[in-house]
Amino acid sequence: MPPAGGGANTFYPWAAHVPPGTELWAVQLPGREDRLEEPPVTDLLQAARRVASALQWLLDRPCLLFGHSMGALIGYEAARMLTAQRTQGVCHLFASGCLPPDRHQARDRDLAGDREVVAELRRIGFSSDLLDDPEARALVMPAIQNDLRMFSSYGHRPGQRLACPITVLVGDADPHVRAADAAGWGLHTRAPVETAVLPGDHYYLFGAHEQIIAKIADALVIPASVGD
Image (cartoon, one colour):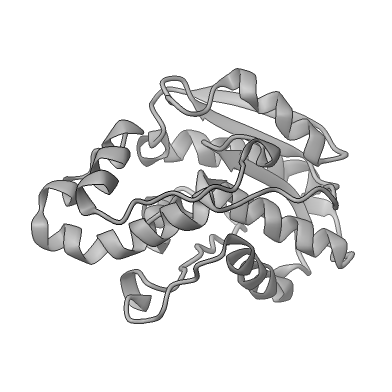
């Protein structure tokens, strides 16, 4: 699950590095890339419900969820929904570049202007050339604006805890999420929580896919025999 404004192509570089016997599925929310003409999802829980619904037919095998920033919250909420349905198969959640869910307080946030959105993206480490190209920026800005509003309006609701382990990934120069914040994810699962710090800012994942996939591969070793 990609960060705000991102699409399935975020994970294109991963395809060459996934372990044998592992399938890579990337979430493509409406309003971007090949779904550009579709109305965007405006509520994070609705996005999570769509992801949970799409995952159900894959859960006859071990399934690990990875999400970055807003994508981590979508993955967490989708896993909660599947856990509440007593669905088997979600064996691990990787929460990347994201504070624990209860640290997010719903708030109104006006990021209507392109200039303000670009300033916010640069502040948190987004350095894509898309921000400097007016034509490219016009294509991606609606999805980014929508997702930032959806992210900022999310408020955690106490309830279902996960049964799977959580690995929290943090960039060592991320201005928003620090390694010390990761322990808070322990409130949201009955299983162990592990923290890994990788070099980079909030968007460290664009240069660290091999390290991330190595950690995912390690997490899949134990549950690989489950369901045989």
